Length: 176
Image (cartoon, rainbow, N blue to C red; front, top):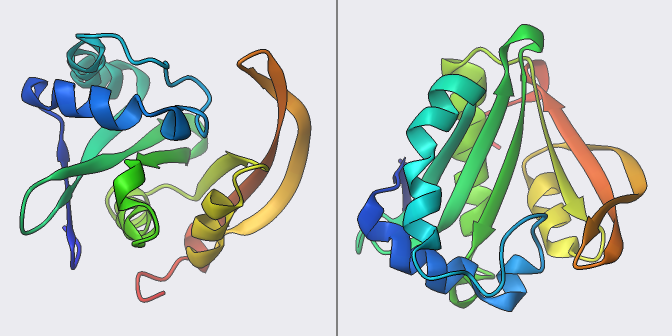
């Protein structure tokens, strides 16, 4: 929980809202694998994978919700690699909630969990360079730009260049 947000497990009832928010082309366009259009029933199918993904694959996906209204705003994930004590965060926020600092606030809470509860040493994140707003989120978290991976991924038949940011546990401060 943060000042304005609750990060909680998704429920199957969240499926239609996930489809509506994540299915917006502007949201899908900023992610590596989000389908567009989002298929009917796809939200619930994705949510149904979460428990197994966390227990077997080290992938935690949480709903980002308004603390007061409980409205679903987006999602945040952490993919951990226990052997090396590192993880990678990813997030998306519905377009009507952009520009309110929700991604930064949710990611700050996830970093706190990664370092204080899971004992990770390093957390990284990547973003398409054509999405500078996501890069600003990572900078606000105190992450360091470690490099640019040119034409590293293909999204909708176009090569995408990504910036890679990371932060170490010793650099992390929950007060930032």
